[in-house]
Length: 202
Image (cartoon, rainbow, N blue to C red; front, top):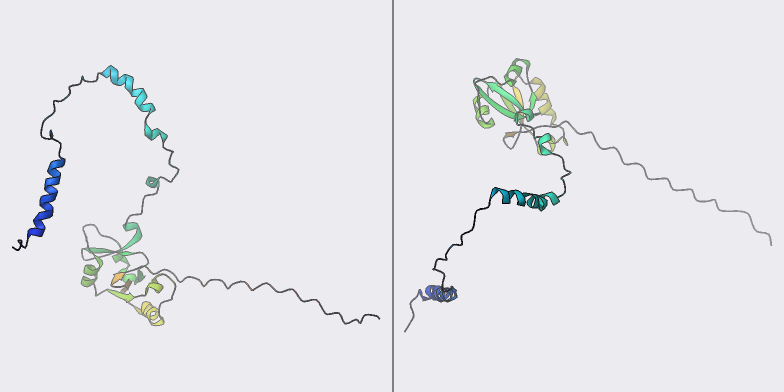
């Protein structure tokens, strides 16, 4: 006679349950009578306190010699960003992300009280009339490669505020790094001694 198709599920569970029941102590469900103890008096606590303080494991730890992080808190977001504000809207971009600021638009880099702070994408979508972007590579943003010549020309002639972007978001553009100095020339090899031409006497 064939066994039930779900028998393999119940057999291990049943065997494990039986083993668990047999291992349980006989008096598991019985409640033990609580042991009553006298309350510790104030005088007893005062007598134990010196011993507790002497055995305090925290006193055995060496003092920390690292710099206190509270003395150098991380800079806030505003100190690392430039503000763009216009029409009751404002956004933050990383410092050095703004490549060109025409004089008539310089006042729009100040936060006006009551403006709504929003993300870059939303702000840019509503202010394309006076903001344009220039896509830069990672190497250009790190200062390892210069901007293309046509981009430099656009910056000079642009009447809009220009923001550098990478993968759709504003990014800082560091100054071009100076080329590394050439390696020192190898040391000159000492001149070989001249061969003697004098003939030995017989």
